[in-house]
Image 1 (tube, rainbow, N blue to C red):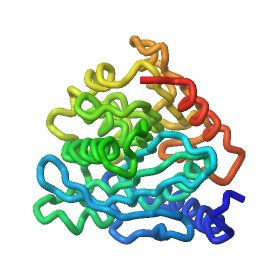
Image 2: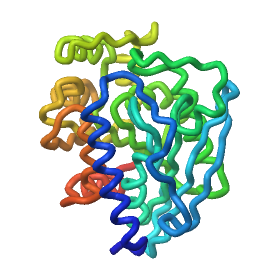
Image 3: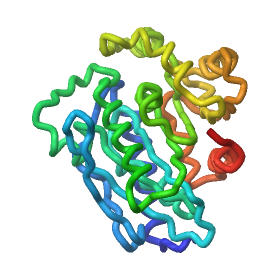
Image 4: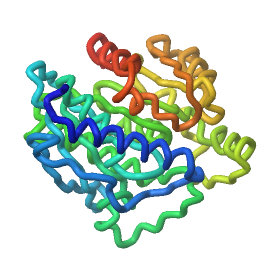
Length: 290
């Protein structure tokens, strides 16, 4: 047991099952969920706090600060840049596992997701879009807050980006770089991802006007050492993409493959199983530097 009790064990399984179901059944494109599957409390997450923060373009975002109470506390704050569906409540199982391993966690919702949607009165979201550039301002605000806030002062920042979160991370990196980067379902070129979605799933996705520039930004913006999780059956964000990304001047990129397809959430599954991905993640956070 990790000290959070039996109720948290059941919460992990509940959230994992619901998350997998939602990822399997939903269409591709933006599918934000307003209602949280569950919310943290001071029993499951001692010291939990909810907060709002302001983006550079004047929007408020809703976030959860989940500090660790492990005896082996690391000076590290883990920020999650989620994918194109759901909301931050889906990442509570991962937060619990990280807390148990001595890591503080800072979860947030993009504008239009979760309770962040309550603070948006002029942002209309089209579900056919793969992502919006405005999410970049959201992530930059969160990373800056994690750097400056009293609750995480002095901590290094580890960013875990999932699916479209990897695009947002690449865009945000030059202005608000974290210390570590872990990506899953890495999209190195949105134009290619758009073509594959149409080819394999018959779904036409809309991209921001400057999406054709992203392939260059992603190669230049990220640090030399990264950890990427790639599904062997992922036909949108492929293992070959990660290998090519590493070949083009990124020899320090570690690629961890797993038996899964697009949006299979290997790390989340790892919260309740054999933990090879968790071990790879903790190993990366221990040995690498910016």
